[in-house]
Amino acid sequence: MSERQKRPKLLVSVASATEAVEALQGGADLIDLKRPDRGPLGRPDASDVLDLARILPDPHQRSLALGELADGPPDLHWVAHLGEARPRFVKFGTSRCRASDDQTPSFSWRERARAWVESHDWQVILGIYADFDQPGVNGLEPTRAVEEAHALGCAGLLVDTFDKANPTRWYRQPAPPITPDWVAHARASGLLVALAGSLDAQAIPRLATWQPDFIAVRSAACLHGDRRGPIDPRRVEHLRLLLDQMSPDEAL
Image (cartoon, rainbow, N blue to C red; front, side):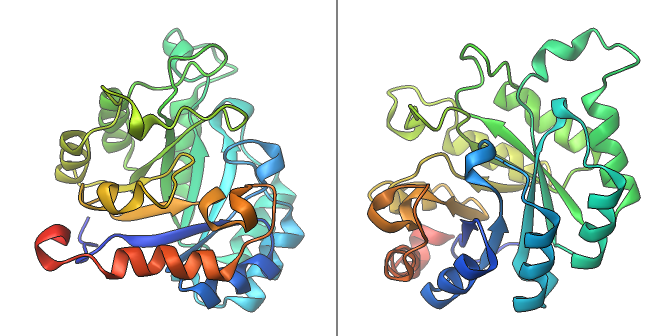
């Protein structure tokens, strides 16, 4: 991909158009609409998608979470509304995809992802989980995810955590599943990379030096750091300042 910048852009996940306004006031570069109460990449209601498009007419500032590939695509009525909203990115989670190597006619997550890549006017992002190997997640291993996303023609990868009740804080682990070398490999493969997963303000400057395309947050941008709470524009402003303060040597 040709989209590269001196510092990672700030993606803020919001639950409504009202929250989008708050995030933009704080300095978010990209607004990602999802329903936090429906999972890590919970699909929003079609009405919320349209509301976001009305208050944020530039499609390049919009991203939408569409749930897990294992759960199937949205219905046709929902897709019709999505087309009108013209997002820049759509994101699908890959939990329960690792078990699908033995494909059956009723389920092929690859076919579902490829259909969205080929049939719609937006860029597809695969959401992979740092806790991919935990019970109930069964997600794609990070290195394999790079290969799969590249082969499918996806635009990029979002690193997240599946378990939001007990987040792993993967970036604090002695041997994290995602590393600077992994980010470099994914980007060298032509993929955009967004780092997320219950990130806190202390971790963001360090992760930004890994040179992802986006730093993506929900909890860190919410009041009291609670992902179920409202977006706090002051917290967003602080996160944006952390990224803006990166020196050229750190960002390049």
